[in-house]
Image: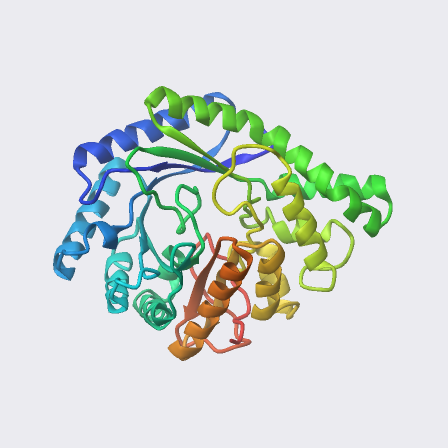
Length: 395
């Protein structure tokens, strides 16, 4: 197959606290979905649970009781062999939510390797909650210090994000029913399509003109059978199919930066990057498939090997990544910054992301890696096989 299924994500619409029977039923469905997808010839990388917002359902619970509940969820995930469970966003956008409660999240996420959490800083109903930015920045710093930075992989600030997307840590659901969504790892397909388009077009500008049709067609052809398969599995189980997130997720050597460079306008981060990114987003939006989630470009600095190399070379900074988000991106994704960055400065960066999302009415998120002891310009030293070490960016 030309694409890998990055994730099949099941939104469990039951209210917290989730019962063991519900989690077992969810795991059974995901296992059957994996078997069906593999029988159809697809590699399936991950299976994921996405729950309702934890701090919304359990608003009247004591912190200690929520921490104990988180441990039971982790134990259930271990037993069921599910490595990813999203606890949904803290509803910090809501004026009635106490921002200081965000401080509980590091104590839930850091010790429980399957659990992901987020904070909603801005939404359509409430706009931007400025008071929530600083506690979120402080939570990011606490996670970094308690885990050498790697727990930040499972925590993000959200803005304008809707439920039922498949990618983590953003994914969450609202219920009452269960939903199924799917995401692809298709950066390699996009790169091959652009390279072929460039060969036929002959010039970079001609490639740019043809790119939306070429990439849109390739994504449509690759994703249509995946949509049909997962929709049928969801329907047969009595769940709602929420859609597919066509963001061409990269990983390691399968690079979205390589796809952008294949257009011939220059290296990732140089002039022309924004133009190619915008053309790719037009392609993603053109498929007429049932979509959900971001449906934009993921530019994860620590997950995409070539982006990491370009970062080390000094080809771009945080401001450029924000600019790309304005036309295409999903926000600031796995961006390494100095561990000593003052929380107030991190909060200002989070508010920039929230302001951009609110102004453009598009989903964005910020997953920042504060590197303990790391200074701007130094190289990261993460041991995780899922992270590409690169230059720490100044803020």
